[in-house]
Image (cartoon, rainbow, N blue to C red; front, side, top):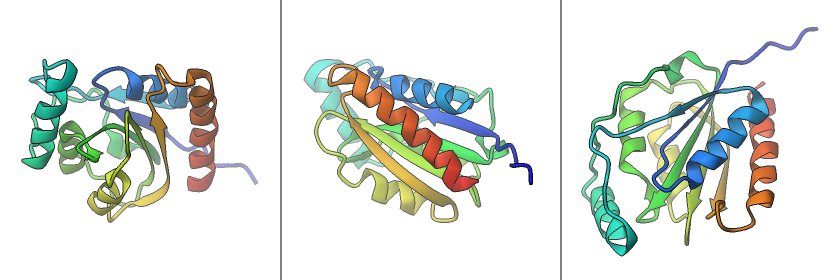
Length: 167
């Protein structure tokens, strides 16, 4: 019996490049399309002020307008969603994505990148994706500057496992 070829996409938001790195690695490992989402008005803060600004956006449940998507994640069988962690949860651009794309009955993998704790990121994402089939989750601690080679290998293997679980 021939295995069904699943269409896969890695969708992510990245502010400092950590989530982008992991998304690129995963997409390449499984032959997936790659979709970086961007708010129309990107946060300009750096240093400590980015934590205050980003955290306040999360606490106020902001959902920024996104630049138009050039791919529709709803057209895929396997969707890996990546987010930085702000205020112990996923970021506002991902909240907008979850509100605007139909993820019902899709095989979903979740990943996050953080500089401290993952907090309730996956718990909150699972709630928002309650009609989807979340098959796995993984988090990375600052992969650009912390054991990058190990994080890259871990990301490759995990992405392949997600596809196998959906299959």
